[in-house]
Structure formats: structure tokens, C-alpha cells
Image: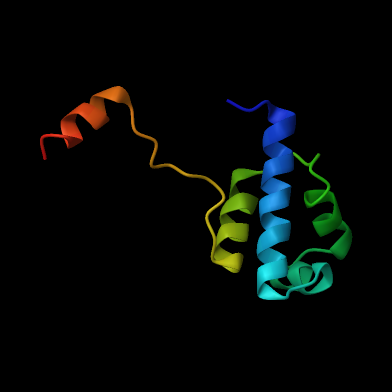
Length: 83
């Protein structure tokens, strides 16, 4: 389990990596997100407290997943063995 500070840094790093993959700079990304470039700079600092809507929009705009919701509990692992 990551701390909040670590999680925010991981989110920022994941977004930076995706932007680099796509060849999109901060100014272009700001335009796609309909925000000022300074907002993107705050997001990518690793210190920003994101709103859920913003995270969902980033996922949609960059066609990526920021979170893995396919976490299996011991119960689901046990049940999946029989399916």
C-alpha cells in the first residue's frame, strides 16, 4: 500500500509517461483538457490533489488507465480456480 504522497507521484509519473508515448507536450495536453498549462504543471508536479472527475477525464483523453481495479481478494482467487 502506498502513502498518499507516493500515490500522487505515481499518478503524475504515469501521466508524464503516457504524454511522452503519445508525443504530446504540456501545452497541447492543457488544450485537450481545456485548462491552462500552469494547471498541467501542477498536475505533473506529483503534489496535486486530483478530483475524481479530472482523473477520469485524463484517462479518457489519453486513452489510458491510471488505476487497476482488477484486484483479486483471496475469496475471488479461490472461486476463480473452480470456474
